[in-house]
Length: 286
Ligand code: NAP
Image (cartoon, rainbow, N blue to C red; front, side):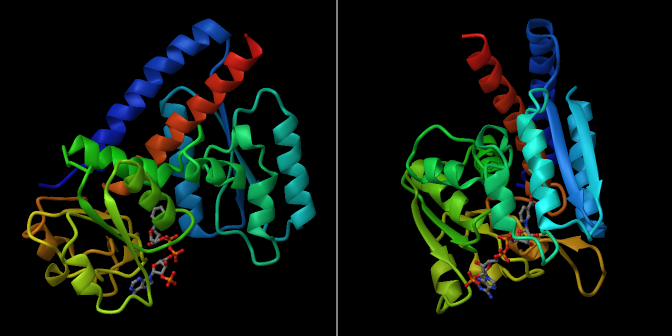
């Protein structure tokens, strides 16, 4: 069975839209999401456009700030500080990657933790690993929602995550662990990867290599979540890290690319923005 991220994302956004209508009545304004894009990378431009479109769809105020590649680190940090201080800005997202002369860690740290809709701020990351209240990073949060929607049991299952990045592999492993899966994290130095993946009831793949996971690496009946976004070298079309056609025959549930994790990431961004807005309003109206 293919799990449609597009459909679930639509349902999540409809729910956010309804809640936005209520908060506008209660607080007099909708949540405001600001997305900063530095440079003109086509993939980043398309991601930012998608985020803006979703934000408008759910009824947020949406602002996209475009900055040239030549912006200095100091200028970008100043811009973020101004947005931090602006009471009418609820969520700040800086599209990654940034040009090499800008330190991404510094940028992420500068975003006010309470406006960190991506969940990348070190304080948010620490809270996630310490099981304290935090903003869940969008892609891992979306993956868990996809598994739940498909009725996949997580507790007590063997989960294998290929990839250990800060934005996908590590946090999704933590969320699976918190749901009582037994988690193995594989990476580029893992020996005999198929031996590791073949016991996985849940296989999450976040590598960035087109069609890397073949049918021989999938346990029959597994749930396969494909996070990768790549271009198929043969067709030039968008494809995941998983050879979808071959693996779909063995997996009980599988996500497609496009239309799987991608739309869920954006839907969770909308949820996170609303959450940041509500946290602020609750504090102000206490
Ligand atoms: P990343 O930071 O480049 O990390 C890639 C991970 O894959 C690393 O941990 C690396 O291992 C591992 N890896 C690379 N080659 C491998 C191999 N041959 N065998 C096993 N592991 C291998 O990537 P990322 O940011 O996590 O993103 C991964 C993919 O997900 C990309 O295609 C990205 O575009 C996509 N993505 C999609 C969404 C979405 O919303 N759909 C969101 C974020 C990312 P080492 O640690 O040993 O180097």
